Length: 113
Length: 111
Image 1 (cartoon, rainbow over the protein chains, first blue to last red):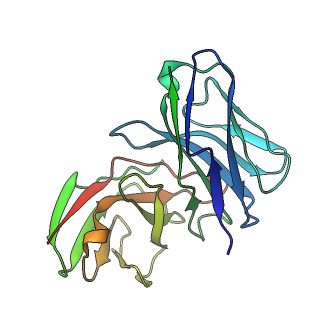
Image 2: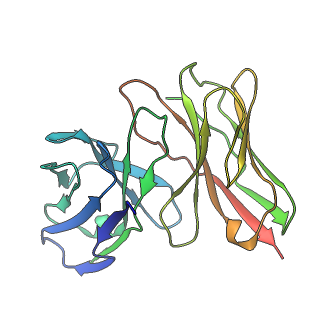
Image 3: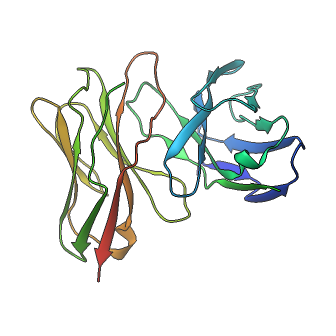
């Protein structure tokens, strides 16, 4: 079955380190998204991509970057991790223009100490 | 962007129907209405979506008002597993394809 997987599930890193969170989907979806969710809050969009080599900034993109070299993967990089980036990160993918549901990964819990 | 208004929280008894309302009075004519839910410690899960007509699937039904300014997600028989935060999200058509999450409705299901 097609799926969307995130890795790692949990990560602890130190302030200032570069961190990359992986997102891999086998749905062959063109659209991929990264969200963060802070404790007790809703999801906020970080970056998104509508296809290979396409990337766009979302609402809270400062300190994050993404690259899309193939359809399946959209890794999220924290250039220099900060404590304010401690959060749960969710990846999602979709096809079409709202005519299909979006599929989310199980999340990566990142702690920056 | 279309704004949504949902109750912060609702309660239901197990095995009874639940009607979760959403107001989206600024929705445009081509916006789809998506519903997602998020169980504790999990990623959001797609529930249902529609444009103008009422929609049914194995999880729920979606009733869309004739003027499209509101919609109601219907869980026909709530189970304990349906306890989650439910998000109503108008999805802008055309070039904007990002889901914008509000605060949603926390549904509590009582045994």
